[in-house]
Length: 197
Figure 1 (tube, rainbow, N blue to C red):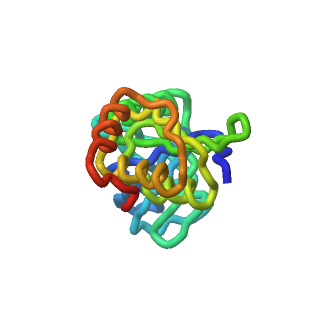
Figure 2: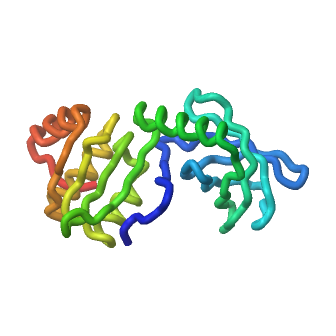
């Protein structure tokens, strides 16, 4: 399925901590993904769908963001919440997301149809935290090309994913950031580099 979300979901190489207040109880959780409109997090708190919880978090040194959020889904300890925020918090969230992407500590993976081809675009960090989304797009959605122009950091796991895409699935590496291009050139120079992960 192609990504048609209104707001991009940001994933993190290391999930940030979120403090949660709900029904008089205080607790903590870990942010699985984030957008300017909401978050998905894990927490032990008994969060109730349809109720509001207070969320306080900081993304890798950003100013603290304190925002109420309506719980819209819950499966076990994983819950989704939609922010009930004003313009100042939206700016703070957007700035924190942009800084995390620029530093490579957060990632966006989206698949779009362009001129009859399915193009996976990755921005921010290209790392092992993207493995599930990357492999789902590759094997279930189908990808013809990977656009890596927005990659700001890459690790060995990210390179291995690209080796699998090109070696096993015939995917073409398209536009590349300087950071990715240098690492990719080195990866391809290693004797016996294969698409095994």
